[in-house]
Length: 237
Image 1 (cartoon, rainbow, N blue to C red):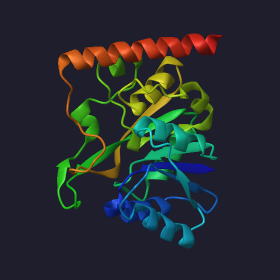
Image 2 (tube, helix red, strand yellow):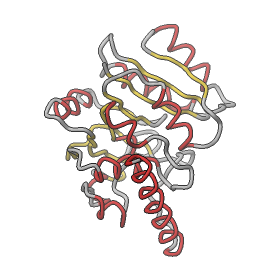
Image 3 (cartoon, one colour):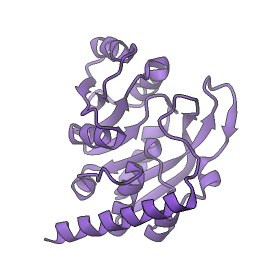
């Protein structure tokens, strides 16, 4: 069983198109779990309409404590053996799940694929390959120095979940935390060099590709290393 975990907040504008593309990728036994974090636009109505049409969609309440807390919340509510993360505004290509599941069937624990980056109405490719732009690769040191993990292109097995939860609220990015957890555990991480989503860039996006200042980057890396070390000690007992 596959679970797609989506966090939403005021995502009415693009959500319908995304949900249509996700549902077209899934089987009847799969699920889409949406954790809404207090939307004030028509997001919840969009979701409610889809829920009436398709029982695979389940709307849950977010904790209203920010993106990281909401990601943790929605992952905990997923029932599937494989969990795919999704933003609220991208479009999945028709072969995304098939390609990712092929890697899980070869014993991958975490899979991330490439993305084409588009403008807000998907009429122009801004960046043909996120992987090329970011120099994506797996590995602990590579992703400590410069994060290459991107959540909306990521999927992982249920077995990995207890090893990255809880997600510390002090870290800058949940996707980096999940990826580094897999790397530190020497899990099989597979990067698919094929764009399997249309990644939408627009003013309302929750994340961007900008860089922090050097002092902020150094501070964030120190916090990340500290939290990774703490989590490792706790799990070793």
